[in-house]
Structure formats: structure tokens, C-alpha cells
Amino acid sequence: MQKEKILKLPSRIESVEKAAHEAEEFARQNGFGDEVLFAVDMAVRESVANAVKHGNKLDETKSVEITFFSSTVGFEITIRDFGAGFEVEEIPDPTNPENLLKATGRGILFMRSFMDEVEWTNHAEGGTVVKMLKKR
Amino acid sequence: MAELNITERQAGDVTILDMNGKVTIGEGSVALRTTIRRLLGEGKNKILLNLSGVGYVDSSGIGEFVSSFTAVNKEGGTLKLLKLTQKIQDLLAITKLLTVFDVFEEESEALSSYN
Picture (spheres, each protein chain N blue to C red):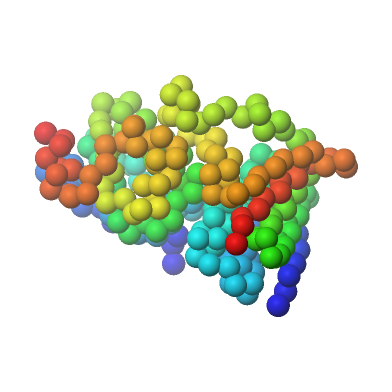
């Protein structure tokens, strides 16, 4: 059984589907159930989409680095982009009445809603790293 | 096969879009946007999205529902949702959009609400 999988994908929208597919395959190989699969799928899609669009700004010379790790605790995901970074606290709450009709800004809410732990850090050599955990 | 298939039918002055597939970043969201723009261009502004065949929506898809809703409103029309799966209902609850959209289980009930 493969306990860790590392992917390096180009900054294009198609990478979202590719990453989600790889996550599903990895989750099934490691015996995760449907609830984990759904959460991981959602979190991978949202975080890779953020990395591609907002982090790397669709610059195909920059990649998105993805690691899946299976442990007794759960399914761990790390996504790194090579963009300018951001402060997660500065992202407006999409559930505030004033933001309800905005077309964007719900990805982070979904990641936090479906995963047990989500943490953003700025990488020492640039870019943003998001680490997520879904418990078994 | 396309990520999202949209079939259009008319019930009086209400246009029903039977959607099948995924409304996600990229193709699925663009397909919905293009269809809504075309309908508004044709003066059709009473729109019902039948989501019974939509198994998956991401934040981009939810955003597209919101964009469609505001675009239709701007044209003096109404966009409503029909037959949400449990997962989509959960996403609309998390985002507090169940307070924004009119949601129906039965098509007949949805259609009569336009009058």
C-alpha cells in the first residue's frame, strides 16, 4: 500500500480534475470511506483551484506541489503554490449578508467545513502552503 | 462527454433547464453561464434550474448559481432551484444561500410560484 503520493502539476484549470482523481485513487487504495472521500475531493479541488488561480495566477511556468499522506490518524494533504502569498484572515466571510451575492470567495469556507484541520502558512522560499487533515 | 449537459424545455413562460453532470470550475460553470446569458438575450427571464441530475458542485459552481441569480434579477426576472440533492442542499446551507434562493421539491409547485 502506497502511504505517500507526491504530484507536481502545471497551473491550469485541468489540474484541479487531475488532482481530485489522484486523491480519490489514493484514498481508495488506503481504505478510506465515502465520507472521507467526499471531504478530500472537495478540499483538494478547492485548494488546487486556489493555488492555480489565485496563487500562481495561471502562470504555467509555476507548478502546484501536492502531497497526500495516509496515516493511522487520517488523510493528510499538503498543497503548495509559488505565488505572492496571502493572509487567510483577510479573506471576507462569504456568509456575511453583504457578501452573500458575491460570485467568488467560498472555497476556503468549504475546505474548513469538510476537513478536520486546515492551516495556511507562507513558505520560507515563497508561496503558500496549505495543510489539511481529514480524520479516519 | 461534456462535464455538464443542459436540456432546455418551456412550461408556459418559464424556461426549465434540466442539468446533468457536474457544475465545477471550468467547463461546467461556463456552460451554465453561456446558457443563462443566451436565455436573457432572448428575453426569457423566468428560469428554473432542475438540479436533480447534478451530482457535484464546487465553490465555482455555487458562485455560478449566484451569478445567474443576480444576472436574471437584473433583467427583472426570477431564477429558482428545483430538486436539490442532499449534498447541494448542504453546500447551500453552509454558504447561507438557502436564504437567497427559492428551492422546490416539486416541479408543479415551482412553476405555480412564478405566477
